[in-house]
Image 1 (cartoon, rainbow over the protein chains, first blue to last red):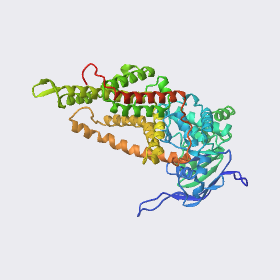
Image 2: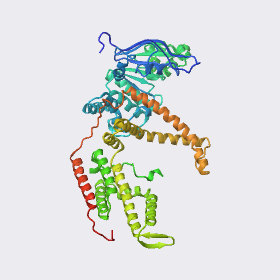
Image 3: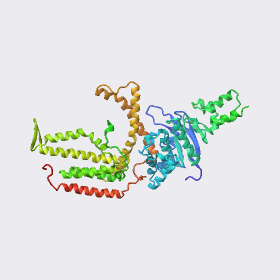
Image 4: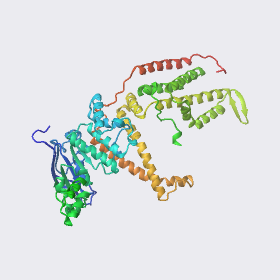
Length: 284
Length: 273
């Protein structure tokens, strides 16, 4: 669609504030935010509550429009009303609450909801639904009722529902926040698989550091601004700075940080248990 | 208490009737209800009863399960019978004190009771054999033929299916809220009817707030999935009439002809009509 550059998402000097009642002062939820996402990239957006990360994700799907600046998805500006449906088709969104985004009473009917809205012919919808359910490994649940599924399974159905619309990019707005640890693992596996095997562009908004250790790039948000941006190893080693804005670093990174403070000579950036084991074994 | 009502519940057995197109079943049931009110003699009721009996056998649903559906309506049926029995003027056949039973009363009471029972059984067979989603789809199609409301066919069926989707979710939520309020010392079991009703307020308020929040989130999620009303929308599942449906239509025509026909054959039977 947009051949001159391969940018999937382009956010250019975007500011946004939520409407307030008269007399109150409007606070910028987002303040002059700019970044770009390439096709096939896995970008993690992290920040504590009120950092503007959820606002940012809503801007990417044209659910809200920037007050200043522009958001371009596949070269289409979200401000143009005629672009809205094309944008929502190419940038799908998975929300936090698994219950409040499933529409139909049967799993496969729900997955079909998106393509039905797009006016896809019935036989093709059937194919897309079967494929999408296969990707999230929920084929056996096709005829089940959503309320009989676990939180993680519901979230995978929500992902399948987006996949059936054949998007170029999926925005995950804290999809694991309401799940138990096993549900969280299921959903994260699925997200990683999509990015790895389907080359799906993924924007993962979360407040769990551990979920985005494997991301290509991490954007750290605080008070409506981007405060840090870079590869996971670069970001997580700045333990002090992250703690200052109320974020936790991965357990192993923190341990390595504490050990280094105690003059234990650990080499490299440590994010996972494996890396820690590796580093510890190399100690003399 | 709510569990005893079998009307509106789905009882899957995979029978021939279950596999019929929902539209066929809706049309058939509507025709049957209209016919019930056109019947005016015993022959008609006999035909209607035989028809229902045959259909029930084909559905493979246990008869006891269907009868349970009638139980909930026993009170209404009894009331109808008693009122008709004593209030119809005519030839007195027995009297208890100031009340007297007339021959006409006996006749109307029997017919009314039969009519009500057949009505309930007929409609519950439709809901017992059709899943709520199929029923919604079928109704969407049928509404398209009703003037004035046809413009809202898609909206109405969407509302119905969302309601069906959220009933279990909200039931579960009610349960949580009740437990949470009980843990804080709320009492829902004892006290007068009025105080018990008052005690429900701490359940209803959070439930309503949560329902509105859910509705808001769901609307956002639906729009994010490109929902923009019924226009240009396709459906994955297409409703297609098959041989069995055409056969049912034939049965329906025969039923209508037969039941209307009984109005014209006045053969006195068992007791004078």
